[in-house]
Image 1 (cartoon, helix red, strand yellow):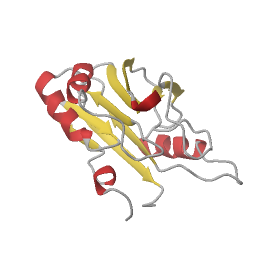
Image 2 (cartoon, helix red, strand yellow):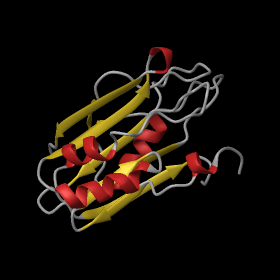
Image 3 (spheres, one colour):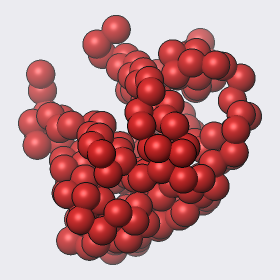
Image 4 (cartoon, helix red, strand yellow):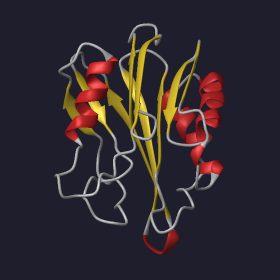
Length: 180
């Protein structure tokens, strides 16, 4: 494995009786501790991420993407990215959960250039066509496939299916291009 282990080795998904947390970095653990303390997903993100910045992986400066859920019909999402002159931009959203619909937040915008531009704007509202985490993860991963003559920047997709009433994780599917 090449690269900085601190940016590559981390728990992507954690869950407990308080709910679950998904992220793309070591900040997952901090968010779970905060969620267990405050039991409010949006507040947990704000408190846990107050000292975190985008990743120090120049020239990309990967945004830190986080999601927290504690049951009910809302989830909280955070995107922390690099702004002009190295400033830190923090975006927090509370999103409604609607049966058959979902939300997409990507680390990168999907424009096939190098270095990849950070995700910007609001989370994207999706119609969910599958009935399982496996079906949905595969549909999303396949929909992001580049044109045949373009470099494939896809890394991974995580799809988590949970009970809205109890916040229980029912199913998880992770597709990692580098792990099969």
